[in-house]
Image (tube, rainbow, N blue to C red; front, top):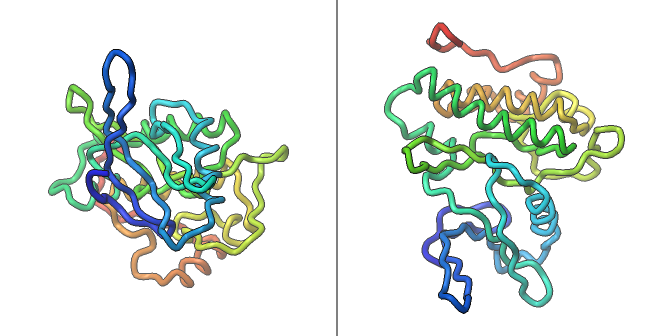
Length: 236
């Protein structure tokens, strides 16, 4: 472990160094570790996320390296370390508006990941800027990768996932059918992607700002949408 870089309801995320022993010399990689809280004994969600990540192989997904077991239960998830943090924080801290090329580049990279999800019948259920991570490549180009599959599920034979239990849900990113009936499909991920696009062009503004979660819930159920009243580039 090197340093803590984030917190969540499940536990904490650390930057760490993964050392792989070999006869020809040790190999070292910078990684991110998702660690359960010491008091959190329910490892089911970590297991579900590990299975989902193991089956995702796409450049615009955070790479999954493995798990660490403690007393026969998952204790850590070991993943690729993205050195520029999450997209939401990045959007909130940059000083000037993104130009049209940057907006398109970020959006297309996330869209490529979403297309992969659809082809493989996976519903992410929590697409948002906070769940997209960033790094710079050798040419200083911003690389965007989708992460946090804690809510992701495989779609059943009807291409729909029914929510069967009460959870803390990201209401401001949810489609009407998800709010009303607990239905999750590729179309509900498209809705969340639309809200994510609003986050990008507004530099991380809160969707439906000025409304409480209850008001957002009622607004969307009645057919309301997130309006954009921004000074956007003409190309948008």
